[in-house]
Image (cartoon, rainbow, N blue to C red; front, side, top):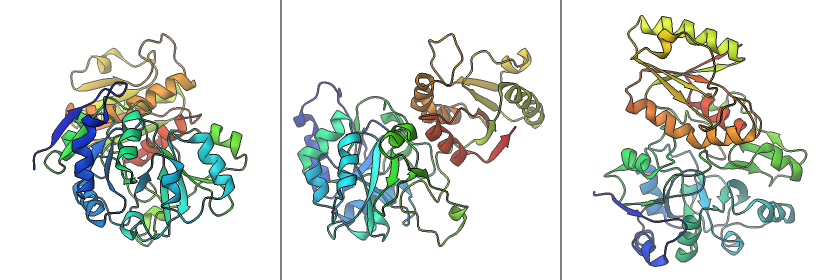
Length: 364
């Protein structure tokens, strides 16, 4: 199969430019498309054939449910049994945007979409191309991230192509995704509010609306084959490059010490090392910085002269996270030492992804 790429300016495009993608979806095919979070791999949420193609292209476990993308509340009404008033207000506050909400699904949604669960995860993306695409189709799209399962999520069309070329017919390229991590997933349908996956909508913002919202604690359920995750991101290892990731959580001084000791340990094993850091001015020996087999990758606000964990810098870290993890593989790096960040605002989502990707976590 040849994988075609069509390029659209997200601020200046026409529905006519989407026609080929629309025709493919209407014929039970699948298409990669941009959202504000990451690129999605979409097929009709009503088509078992299309959804099965998504699972096959990604190599996705069949018990990992998909998120359904809609363009308006009328479309939501067609795929869920009921929209409680408190959830309707949540939709009105955060949609379109990077928030996914669990609902009791209607019979229109095949069980293959929800991995046999009676709930369906739904969101309304804010990306103009995604919204226009779904609206013109007139049907919801089942769409997980457009990558091979367990790989870092794609925030650029080239990431999709690198993973799925020859496996899907079309990619809509609208440049980089500006959020950079997947949507927040929340369950409020049982009368209490639980964030199942932190993401593009910050916990602090949710608490302004839902003061008693809690973070889901899986208590190692992901280790059990019997555990049925209600949403993506709860059971399987995610977001990993081919390289081994060691996550360092602690002070800058602790980070500096660990980089020195880990560099010595793994360079004696002749491994190529990557260091992903968010502070420009941390102190490590020049022989590490100048080591030709050690790649320094900066995550953060590149035009800033100060080190900070404020929301602006955290947003930039989130935006560049998955691209940086993919860059690691392009550099043929064997092992990556990653600096942890504050869990304030979108930092909570960043740390969730890094912990999922890490093979080892070292805490101060």
